[in-house]
Length: 339
Image (cartoon, rainbow, N blue to C red):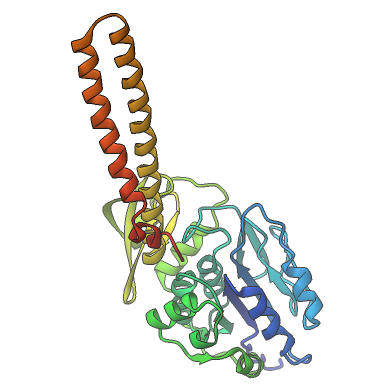
């Protein structure tokens, strides 16, 4: 019986967001033609948008790129691109396309892909974080590392949007931090090397990978096996959140699977607060109009004392509305909702 050849680091998972098209095309155009790993890409995109990313990457001329369908066999030497509004996940022999719970307020998200790749392929995985805002990909890259894989991050000083690379570096042990013009050579070397021994898959990573595989949001006890319940509520569904300690940082996940990094949670709460303030402003403006009509009606019937009472309530509602306008115009509130 012939000895079994060692496995290579031949699985490359890439996450990016703002500035991602430029970063991906620059990287792939520099890749050697004789280097053909199996590649999976998640780039944040508007859910209703039509994604032209496979066509753009195909034009680069490195590897064929396409949107896979659910359950489709993995194609070695191809670039699998997450379709809009769906998570891209991988098993050992096929891909999963899931419209499951959003993570970090986005779908597709980088973290679910990276976790699933770590569980499925362990030390064969090279995880790559490129240009983008906020911190999606930081937790997933940590999962890749804990499953024995290799982590590569674009130098934040080289990224068009440094948020994702900087967050990944701040929260993980990173194997390589390089600018794009050096990354192609690095990846070509890594994917040609034998993969190191594969460690056991950590329990918490396996659980969170399983949660992402849910096609529909269903209440599950899985989250509480890897986190501690809190009094915080999920900004998306209102369910209770559990706190997950992920290395040096914290994350949150609800029972139906919505997940938040610290940055994503802060952004979601700020957005929810602003929305609530606008609702309150509209309600107070409606009350001003209601009390004005009631005061006019009372005066028309000769009830001056009753009209004066409605006038006082109208003035109070107007003061509340003016106060809410001041809060909504506060630059600090606007900055909280900016990338």
